[in-house]
Image 1: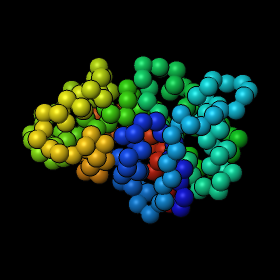
Image 2 (image 1 turned 60 degrees about the horizontal axis):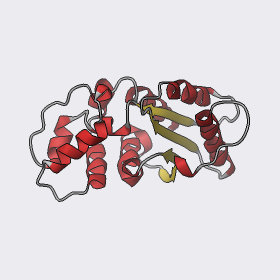
Image 3 (image 1 turned 30 degrees about the vertical axis):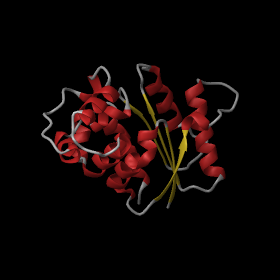
Length: 190
């Protein structure tokens, strides 16, 4: 099964998102990643983000992918959730898809499981306050990384956390962003 994975940011594209997708049922899938910023939306009605998601859907169909995964950060723009939901439900193509919005950012997901964080960084990290309400999840991840004695890069840290993270914990701690995204992802894998 070929899956087009469109996301923003090097941390998602460095294997972290693929690791989560494998844990959600895509263990046998072949993932091909594209950066959302490199996709140019078609002209026409609808918001820019909606058009970009539909453009990615058309690209996946035209290039014979079996499914599309599309993930962006909320980044304080609440309207993104509605725009992505409209694209998820759009009847244009019947290709299986999982379109999602990480609340506030994808980085918040990395803060959800302190056991995975502790194992990757090599020191005991307490439970982080509500990840989806963190002021700057990206900065919090960087701070935890910098406080460790680990030589792992930040990029590899995200991939390792995603490989170890408990999906139920992540769903419970990030119910607005990860949980609905995970439900959609599970439906696209046989």
